[in-house]
Amino acid sequence: MTQTAIPYLFMRGGSSRGPYFNRADLPQDPQKLTQVLITVVGSGHQLNIDGIGGGDAVTTKVAMLSPSDDDWAEVDYYFAQVSVEDQLVDFKPTCGNILSGVGPAAIEMGLVKAAQQETEVKIRAVNTGAYVAATVQTPKGSVDYTGDVSIAGVPGKAAPVALSFSGICGSCTSGLLPTGAIRNTIDGIEVTCMDAAMPLVIARACDFNLTGYESASELDSNTAFFERMEAVRRKAGELMGLGDVSNSVVPKFGLVAPAKEGGTIAARYFMPWKTHHAMAVTGAQCLAACALAPGSVADGMLERPQQTPVNVELEHPTGKIEVLIDCNCDGVFDVNSVGLVRTARKLADGNLYIPSSVWDGNPQ
Image (cartoon, rainbow, N blue to C red; front, side):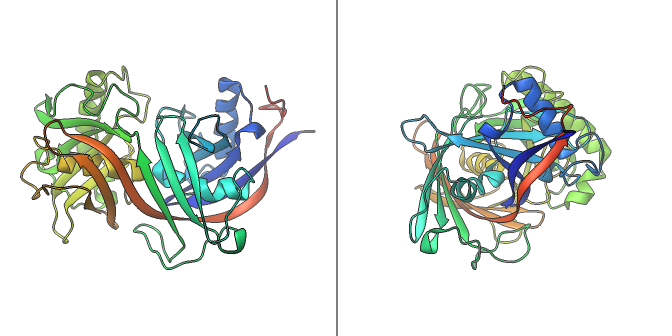
C-alpha cells in the first residue's frame, strides 16, 4: 500500500473552507499529526498543488471533531491553521468561520443525533476553551443546507447556523486585556491589545496613514505597512505574554476607522501576514468588544450604547458582519457572551489520500 486513506468531509464554514475529520481517524502523536495536515493541505507550494488547500489562509484550515468528555459540551472541536507555503501548523488559535460547519459536520459524522426541526450542538473549542452552542437546521432529522441567509464574502444564500459564544475572554492569554492596560504605545503607534475569542492587536488605520476603507488587495500590496505592522505585532505579542510570535498566527492584527456605510465601525483584519478578504468570526468578536470598550483605540469613532446586549455592525472589505454582544459597561468592562449567524455547506465527502511514508494509518 503506497497511500493511506483518511475519511473526511470537505465543507465551507462561513467564509472559510477545509477538511473536517473525526479526530479518531488521525494520528494522536502531535508531530505526526502536524506532518499529516501539512501533506493533506499541500503546504509548501503557493497553489497547494499536491493537496486540497486553496492557496489562501482561509482555505488551509482544518477541523478535527471528537466526542467531548466535558459536562456541558457534546463535541470537542480542535482547530489547526496550516500555512500555505511555509509548512507550518499553528494549533494556538481557533476559527469561528470553520466553527460554523462544526455543528453540521458533527451531525453528518454521527457524533450528534439530529432532531426533527433544528438541532442544538454544544461545542467546546479545545484550542481556546470557549463554549459555543450552534443551532443547525435539521428538518426531517437531517442537515438542510438550503436557506435564505446570505453572508458577506460568500456568494448565494444558505441555511442559517446560529452561534452563541461564551467563555471567550483570555482565549490564549491571561484575560481580556493581557497587557493590563486598555492602550499601549508600540513604535509610536497606540494599540489596544485584547483577547476576546482571538488575541488581537488593534490600531487606528489613520495612524498608519490609511483610511481603513482600503480593499484587501490594496492592503496586501502595501509592503511598507505590513513591515511596520509586523514589527508592532511581534512586540505586542511579547507584552501579551505570548512570547516570540514571529512564526505564530497569533496575535492577529486589526485596524479600525469610523464607519461610512451605516455600520457601527469600519474594520480590517489580518491573518496576520495577509488581509482577510472579509472578516473572521473570532476577529469580529474581539473587534466588536474593542469598539464598545471605553478608553480603547476606538474612542471617538462611535456613540457607545449605555445598555447591552447590543448589535455591533462591522464594515469590512466585502460587506458587513453583525455581532450581538452582551458586555458589562458599568465599572470594569467585560464580555459575557457573543452571538452571530453564519452559514455552512458540505462540498464533498469520502476519503482523501496521503503517502504512506508520511503516515501508515497507525492511530498512535
